[in-house]
View 1 (cartoon, rainbow, N blue to C red):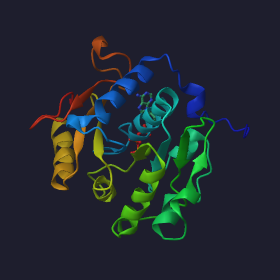
View 2 (tube, protein in one colour; view 1 turned 60 degrees about the vertical axis):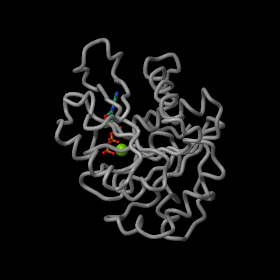
View 3 (cartoon, rainbow, N blue to C red; view 1 turned 90 degrees about the horizontal axis):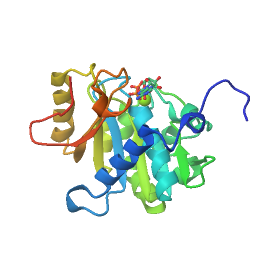
View 4 (cartoon, rainbow, N blue to C red; view 1 turned 90 degrees about the vertical axis):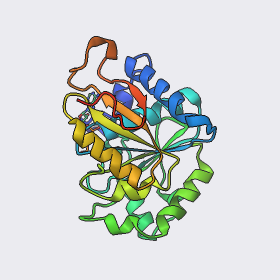
Length: 239
Ligand SMILES: Nc1ncnc2c1ncn2[C@@H]1O[C@H](COP(=O)(O)OP(=O)(O)OP(=O)(O)O)[C@@H](O)[C@H]1O
Ligand SMILES: [Mg+2]
């Protein structure tokens, strides 16, 4: 429609694919975590860059919106390396940045997608170092508001080890999902990411192992992995 060469998620998403199956499984695991029937907002993070946060969060959001018919919202909270506007083919601004600056109501930052139940809040215009923006009370106000209007909120974020943004956002969501890249994320790095989140009192739900380069055996189904719940002292699936 915009004539660009870029493929959006709607071009590549296949609802019969193993990925879609895994995303449905992931959602059913996280939505009733430890007996809490009202898990509705989730932060997706990882230890470092490029481990698949944006890929997993966007496929999860699309899956939930398409298959469960829930009013779903995905928020691009990675202000340093925003990607959701490209993935979903929506304008990049105004977005979360303008909301954090107090210039925009979060509901006015919401963009429509071709999937009726799925909306996107993009990152907004880029800033060099946005950490301080996540520190004020406004973050809590934004989440309170969007939680009221949407059944499911999924937040794509920066990685936890280099920056503090995801740690700050973790207290505004019901649960956190940590993405690991199979064959790439070293165990000690994964443990460090886990410890940062637990020290911040995040409700770490579990890890998603992104098997991008297919280093795991075939029984891990396709490129995407498996989901494991957080267990004391363990980061399952990490290399
Ligand atoms: N399972 C996968 N199958 C195919 N491509 C993938 C998969 N996971 C990630 N990728 C690709 O790897 C690259 C990095 O993935 P993605 O952008 O999701 O990672 P990220 O953790 O969000 O990165 P960043 O830290 O830069 O935000 C992208 O080009 C993405 O399309
Ligand atoms: Mg990303």
